[in-house]
Length: 471
Image (cartoon, rainbow, N blue to C red; front, side, top):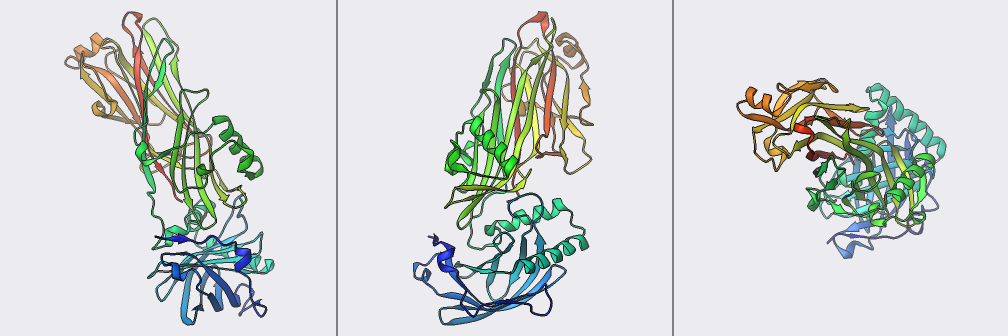
């Protein structure tokens, strides 16, 4: 079993007196005589007390592209390691803004899990994995702030030279912050999970939610909406908070895995989804908070319109410090991505039928394809009961976002005549060409129903999506 060894860095990672950081050839190069380290994860308890250090750590940096070498000493065994890769700037308004992170490969059976120059503490943090035995070794050393500034400028030059905008750079940085992504002996988690939610509603004001499908892949971790919303608002305003000031479970931000909870029966209606990846002494978490609205609007004697809408109230990537309880924003607006989102509904009474459907959205990101939306319909034999929307709907048309699809036949009688005794009992809208991730992004789906003789209307509603993380 892997064992993570939690020894405070300040007690272990101290440089020897002769250690110094100097310029190698130019001000953007980095040379360290000696860096003491420690084993922070091992599958062999006998390795916990290994004495490890790097001798002659040398990095040559030109426009963000680097190469270098060092001698890795483990007890009395010495191995020369070659390094090559690129350095990227961390931008934005988060905790690591102004830092430098590396995508670096190493030789001789070793992996560089992370190379991180931290501006605030003037620290070089380096994590190396022995790919054979799974040991993780962490090295830390102080670096002059002017040196970090010079290297940061070089990384900006690299990003500009290769046409990397801030969004693309952020995507790369998020992946590099998670040390498990480059590890052969790390924790492998799915980068996307399917999620489905459904329920019922009626024109008398009734609303219910079924148990979400896919819960076996998520930890159902209940939270109080007001407390979660208060924390996310404080983080948006100040960039940092301490978990002890909020009535929220620590496991929301500490334990690795996928988490969720729905409060669609509450006021406001909400659902959160989160994905966490525990590092050595902290955990990174992507979390998104959805608010929902649902109900019948503009009721007329023979017409009812059922609307269902989802809005990203907040989305954020944070770091949780296991020791202090501090939560710091890494990137604002970097929550989970709602991909391949589909919203559907069906009427339960055989004489009530759909007349049209409209799928709309704002502040969505264009995914793949043309950006069109796809409408699906369920033309079912008159009198049949629809138990599952997704079993009966099939693709019908492609339209622009917000374009209404009107059906032939506006009553059950007309539809039975036009469609060989079949009626439009189920509808759905497909947003697979769009991604809902930005804070404030919204999608709404409306079905207009002809209700025969003004009778009550009961609908089953559902939405399903692929939740994506780039952590």
